[in-house]
Image (cartoon, rainbow, N blue to C red):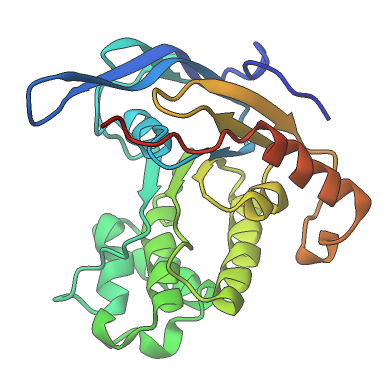
Length: 263
């Protein structure tokens, strides 16, 4: 286990170098969301970002997704600068975002509807996500867990190199969340994509991740990085083991308490 200020220099598949993002608030005052973020991830690595509310976790994801531009600093994927959204980066939010006017099949197929053999690919993802029997139905009949399976299928079907997840399981009940964690580990391992995962749940971050990045209170800065020491494949059987609980304690020790708002 190691605690450090940045991910290793060799981990350059995804790289954020000195990234700062400044927003203007409603009174036209500059608000620094994240400050001098240096963070990298290796190809196929699962990295979680945790920290107090308002520390800029979601901002980091939006910057990597290309939905926001950094005020300063650079973001690269395989050495290429991120200047906007791209198919190689898939983003899944906590809110489900299905197209209500399309069937489940049409939702999954949306990004590849003109691809060769798209029917076979869609069938595979419907099966993998346990949605085959609902293929001709509309999203309104699905539970929260099923909607997140739909969101994952729609994102993963284009085979992104990087999967960005912004608290995707935060609104789910505990048992559904457990099954989604297991499913996420299975599909990301199978597809060998790099994952950047935002969560408020320390135990979830330790269960899923090769490394956990802890951000400070706003403005978000990299406070620590905890390297996982637990063996793969990971499962909830790790809960209660000494190695797992030591990692949880290490992340918790680096988590700053939320600061009260200035009055």
